[in-house]
Amino acid sequence: MKIIPALLCLSVLALLTSCATNPKQPPTVDQLFDRADASGDGRVSRAEYEDFMIAQLFAQYDKSGDGFITEAEFVADGGTPETFRAINTSGTGRISMEEAKASKVIRQRLALPFREADVDGSGFITRAEFHAARERSRPYIR
Ligand SMILES: [Ca+2]
Ligand SMILES: [Ca+2]
Image (cartoon, rainbow, N blue to C red; front, side, top):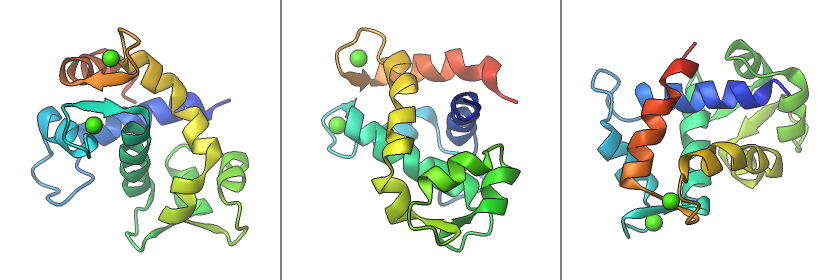
């Protein structure tokens, strides 16, 4: 299962690189946390984490920025054709954001990084845990 290290790498890359508005000014970890904490209650739930990561991963893979991930884009960034097809349930040859968000395959594979980030097993990632996860992930950067 090559996708798990790939996803971990990507999650790190997503945290370190700009996937958002200003490519020259990468968001700080605190800004990323605030973005992930959609409800604003100071902690990131599993669902918030998944939505956040899917958006980050999507931006990472969608190099052309057209709102779709093609198989070529997916494979170029470390994904496998098998995983692409597993996510691309529509079989259209390109993954939309809706498809990515609805993908059980992606959500299943985000379970491990979430568990690792949620050090105390509370079911939520706190700001401190979010910072620590980023620190721990540094060696994974390819
Ligand atoms: Ca929250
Ligand atoms: Ca926690």
